[in-house]
Length: 196
Image (cartoon, rainbow, N blue to C red; front, side, top):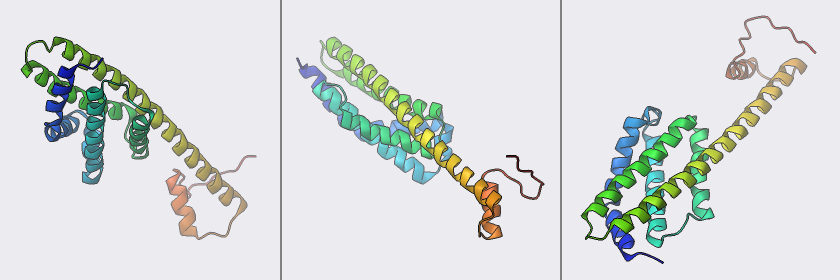
């Protein structure tokens, strides 16, 4: 059964959406230096992901339901993008936890300012935020690791292709061979011996 006080608190929370996003971004910049170093375009992507995440959390809280598979899939795609950007998983998870902490800070402010009798609503919200944090953290980590495995497979395939090209002598420009060698950490100014 839905609690009307929860909906009122969430409505007040949503009225502060821009503030929540701004506070989250400031907190991420302080807590996760690798995000701040990634540049403005990356941080804009982070801002969009934060806004989407806060809206998803708000919807879940307002309707007092669990996160849907479609909502999780959207969040998983963000986790995959973070892996592709080379952001460490620990930093990705810290950024998500920072957003959830900011959301809880604002939600708790709204709970404190709501009329008497909001204790039950506060407990419902706390349980829902904790559950959401757990589900999203797990989904992001899984998606991140899956994307990371795909990246490693792709890099290993490219490395094998490069070595085959060098060993079997393909018709390639020397600049291309040197560029590819450098990509994989090979210094072709040194002598190498192929062992089969």
